[in-house]
Image (tube, rainbow, N blue to C red):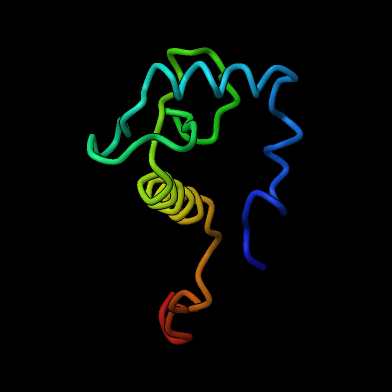
Amino acid sequence: MAHNWNTSSRVKRLPGNWGTIRKRILARDSTCMICGIRPSTTVDHILPMTDDHRDEALQGACDPCHRQKTASEAAWFRAQSRGPGRRRPDEPHPGLF
């Protein structure tokens, strides 16, 4: 299943004044803080997977940089939470004690 803004629970965790916060951050960071080239079009949480909505915890980002950063962070978190692999561990030889 694809994960995107429409399937994310993130929107429910945003504060009621998110529109005001978003406008303020995009006005402050008019250029993407990640690449420094393209105009900012979205607001990024600097620390991944947090709900810290203070101005100092947010940055303006362009859509391509934000998508790449989010994908990279999600892959890292998935790798950290992976359970044991499918390969069974070696069993001791039955003749050895």
